[in-house]
Each structure stands twice: as structure tokens, then as C-alpha cells.
Image (cartoon, rainbow, N blue to C red; front, side, top):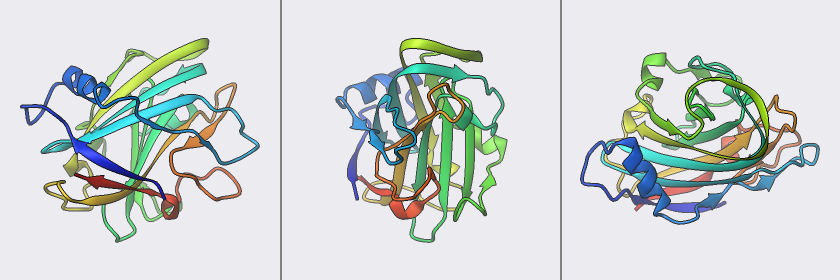
Length: 217
């Protein structure tokens, strides 16, 4: 199981603006790779890295993506953004078995659910999701699939209160279990790559038993 020691974001502000968040995450270095191809039937592997940090009230994540096809057609909260070019953060803050799946396309459209597994998961309220700040390099307008040597990034500021089933408080010293993903279910080159490996026969991200570890230091 992989482990990340999540550092505190270097900012004087409780809620740094998104341009500052993005720049501070860049300063953390080349990032962690989302590069595991778990399923041979989907061999395509885009270049995907991420950086993660924490603050007084938020968790910060920036994904860096390079791929041959990009699509961002979903514009409404809780639409199936996994069908677009999509990055995902699945996280379990405690050992009660509840995890949250946060999924984001290249223009910042978000889906968020929570539950114990794929079959009992429910969508989060749009009001909760709207509190997640985001900054993208692909703009915010939808577009059909384009191809080429395409690079894009998305930065997320996720309030701790977003994880509404849990009372987390100060992140310092806490440990979460999590995984990071990239997918594109309905792209010309569908793919499913992960940070921590998944040992299922078919693609399935809703498997908390394969989460890695985040330690907030």
C-alpha cells in the first residue's frame, strides 16, 4: 500500500485564492504518478501526476494531465463526468467504512457521492459540492472530443466540511485512506489508471480495500 505524507500548504491566508493554491502546489515538485494500468483490456496510459497539501479548512489537490484525447461535455453537478476526461479522488477519513468519491472533468464539473461501496453510494447535495473551489486550464465551457498532444490541469480546494458524514476538525496528524484515478469512459481511447493498484478483474474504482494512505504532517 502506497503512503503519502501530505504537507501543509505554505500560505498566510486561511482561504488562499486559487491562483496561489495552484502555484504553491507546483512548488511541491513533480508530483505523484497515477500510472498503474490494472486491466490489460484498457492499455492506454495518459501521463498523470498530482500534488496534494492541506490547510486550516481545506485539502488542496492539483492534477497534471497529458493525453491524446480530451472531452468535457458534462456541465451539471453530479452528471457522469467519468464519461469525459476525468480525474478522481476517493477518500475514507475514518475506519467506519464510509468513503467519498469526488470526480472532476477538465472544465471543473464535479460529481460527488458517498457510501460503503458502489451499490449503496448516494450523490451528495449540490450545495455541498458547490463549496469545492476549482481552477482549470481548459476553461469552463463544454467541448466535444479533441485530439493531439494535450496538456491540462485542474486544481481543487476541498473544504474539510465537504466530508459531511465525519467531524474531522484539524487535519494535523490525521491519517486518511485514499486513491487517485484518471479515466475517460467514453473517449476514443478509454482508459482506467490508478495511483494505488487495484486487484479486480474489471475496472472498479469503488474498492476501498485497495486505497493507499494519506498522513497529514
